[in-house]
Image (cartoon, rainbow, N blue to C red; front, side):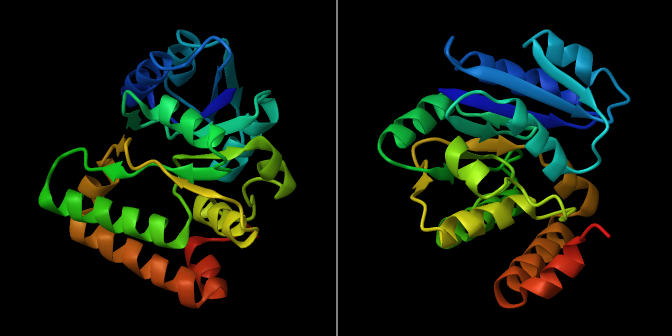
Length: 225
C-alpha cells in the first residue's frame, strides 16, 4: 500500500535510527525507497542494509530528490520522511487508517527532540501552522494519484517545496488528514546550530511571507535560476 521515500544527504549519523524505526512498521506489501543525493559519507551503504531500493544520485535539491523517489515508487500512497526523523511506533498504521477513511494527504504532529522549552515552542508553532493551513513540512503523505496530478514537488523552489505542495493540494480541495494520535520527532540540529530563537524568527518570517506575499516568499527562500 505504501511507498516510503527517504531523501538523504550525508545523513550517516542518523540514517540507521530513522530506517530501523520505519522497517519495524512496514508490511511486506509496502516498499522503502532511499534516495541518497550527492552523499560523500556512508549513507548509501547504511541504506542498503535496510532496503534494496537505494539510489545514489546527483540531484541537487530536496524537491528533485523527493520527486526522483516518487518516480521509482509503485504503491498507491507516497510517504515522505526526512532522513533525520524518528517516527512513532504507530505512524505507518495511522497513515493507513487515515487513507482508508478517505484522507488524500496529510501529516502528523511534530514533537520536540530535546524537550527544551524553545524546542517545544517551535514544534507547537509548526504544528499550528500546518494544521491551520492544511499543509505540511517534509514529513508527509499523499495519494500517488494526486501527487502525479500536481506534478509533484516544485523543482524551481530550493526551499519550501513541501509547504507549496500542501498548499496546492488544499486549493484542489483534497481531503486533509491530521494524525493527532501519532507523531514524528525531528532532529533539532538546525535549531542548535542557528540558535532556537534565531531559527524560530526566520521560520515565523517565512510563514508570514508565504501567507501575505507569495512572490516575495519565493524570492526569499530561493528559486532556481
